[in-house]
Length: 467
Figure 1 (cartoon, one colour):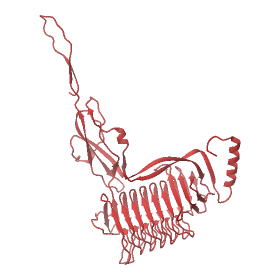
Figure 2 (cartoon, rainbow, N blue to C red; figure 1 turned 60 degrees about the horizontal axis):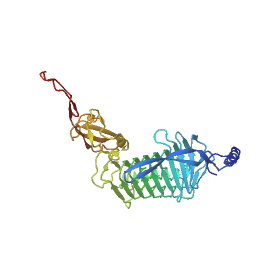
Figure 3 (cartoon, rainbow, N blue to C red; figure 1 turned 180 degrees about the vertical axis):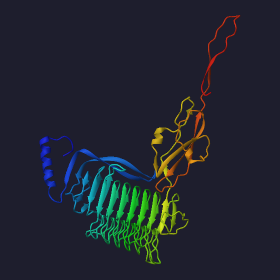
């Protein structure tokens, strides 16, 4: 039956049946809704090098409540309000899509089972303080907070596009990823605020005990991953290798447990393949009172056979390292100290162009079309603008007084840069030349007449144009 107006009596009967079904244990209420539910889809744009958001909506979904335990069949599940009475571990079979409505809180004290071959996508309705929240706990031994466990160790495909997601693994398991003995699966974070903590021997995001990391991609959002004892922040659990990590943007903090890498191998595990193309990344290894130390990005401690793995850092990203947190010494080689810090410049995305064909009118004019300015966005800081008469950097940042309008004819330079915040570096200052041409001067004499023998009258005229 398609959504729309229905016969009132038929609709009443259908809803009664649905409600009765929803009362059976282990079932959920399925709704074909006339009122759509919106959500934000997020996608990494490889051309613009940023996350782009699109608002979408659905009209068919299941309301998450205390009876909802089995998700799948490419269904949509909507969490709205405060939901604290789900006392069974959710199991995802096939593909499930979860929307965290604004202001909602969904607590899952036994977590979500997403094993190899299955997929969970998590969305929010907006970004910021009002984002919906998900709290998931592995609860017992062997289970990841979100991921493997319960007989199938390896984690599945887990994608987070938004929401405030806080996850903790059970003993020997990752926060997000593998259960005890399981690999991390494929994990993608494109938005939201994610806090993932592994239990003893598990990674924050990645593998459980003896489990390798899998494949992890972070495109954006704010991610804090903390490994349990012997588990990497992002990477392998105890004796697990690092797997493949790609970080393109966002603010990432990866903290390894004792003997484990920040990003890479768990205790006694080798590093994997790590690529950092953008964002701000802190990778701090756990303490190591042995000869073979754990690395910020690379191997875990206590094994001479473990190798660091590969680390590929974009040329625009500066790397720092040292023996203390927040290192300030820039690294110019492939050394892998305990504390590593990667910082990319803040950026103004989009094409910023000045107006052309400007001519003096006597009134103040915009030098950049407001529509073009509104089409740009800032990553990692605050955009600063100055309009100057010379193509030189203002001597003081305080001279960046804004993108003002200009009245007089002449050549100007729009200077701009992005002041970095939250660990981002300041961008390089750039300039755009723009010119307001002088208007053509038109002189119009006033009509005068007189008689012969009279004094000649004064000549008067009007001047129009740039004086």
